[in-house]
Image (spheres, helix red, strand yellow):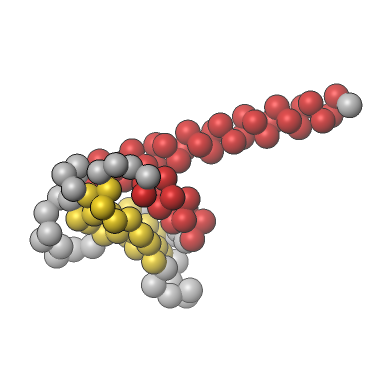
Length: 99
């Protein structure tokens, strides 16, 4: 996954827009849902500029925590949710196959 920062932003480390290459609503919506729940997050949202462009803009604004730290924590937490979901799925498939 390639992530870059929108150049020229001078709002400080608590307000950043990141560009995810080769990503869309699938990652954007899930990540936004997780990050929005953090106490220090003032705003979190994403856009897909155009369907023909294979990228997503992801905006984070916090009260004090650097936006990059929030993004990293969000990605880590999303990974944990996905791993937990896969484990539950495998358990249920195994239980179903035993019947």
